[in-house]
Image (tube, rainbow, N blue to C red; front, side, top):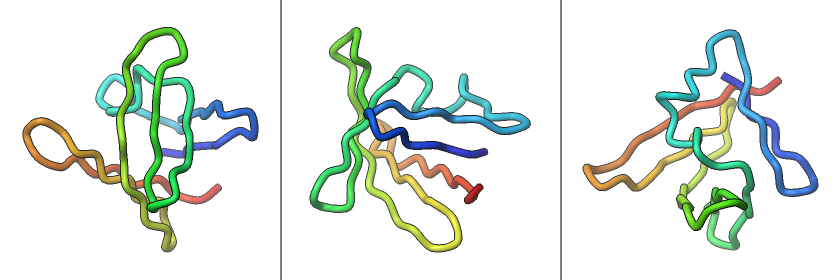
Length: 78
C-alpha cells in the first residue's frame, strides 16, 4: 500500500489492494503534520479526525490510538 501526501494538505492511499475499507484512514481526506512526530488526519466535510504517530525507516509506519488499543499500518516508499 502506498500513501502520497500532497502539498495542499490532501493525501491519497493507493496500491494494488489498498484495502481502504479496512484502513483507519478511509474516512479522512486531509492531513496536518504535528511537531511531535504525529499526523492529524481529518475530514474537511465533517468533524471526524484521527491522530497517528509515525516512524520513518524503510517504510512509513503509522500507529493509531484506537478505542481497543493500537492499530499499525505500514506503507512502502514509491
